[in-house]
Figure 1: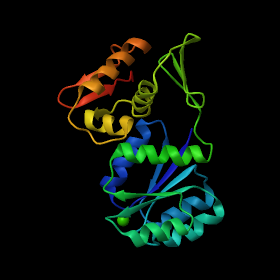
Figure 2: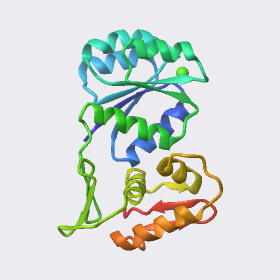
Figure 3: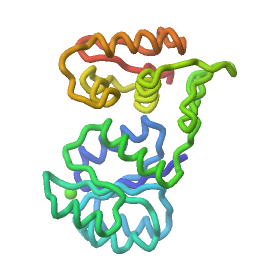
Figure 4: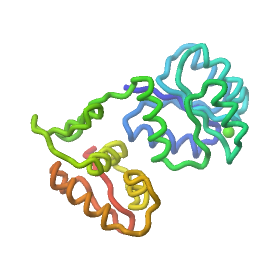
Length: 219
Ligand code: CA
């Protein structure tokens, strides 16, 4: 289980992060000030730290000095568009930063990228009988390969990495096709239909009225 420490004093943001990370399968500990962060880091190891900059007690930069020798990856959470903070954070050895407010899907993507860089992410994801190998980019069920196109594969991965989350067609399009959504929903719909059929997820990949799609998880 991947353990993530969230150091963020704004409770609503912290709660949202915790819920989202939990849903994505990570174990998450939240602390709300710099002193508590330093305390817990003295006794516990984490696979990743999400670190707010403006914190009571000790701020994110001060904490970074403390974290660096511990060699744990850090993603800074920066307010607004403070370019100085971003640059300073990266110079101090942070792995990435996220500008608040951010979308959850963005948070999860950054988290995963950093974890992968540190080889903390399993390269094989198993879900509902489906085995996805992210290294060879292959998908199998019952030891049989399911041939997917590149886009179908990326779309499947997007759903698998955001289980139970309703994804907007716009978001799906921008994530998978990498360009701005121009209102053509048929591309997304068509690919979802093809994935449903190919991997046998007719019931699991559900349409969400006026939004897009959600990968339904049995709880
Ligand atoms: Ca703050």
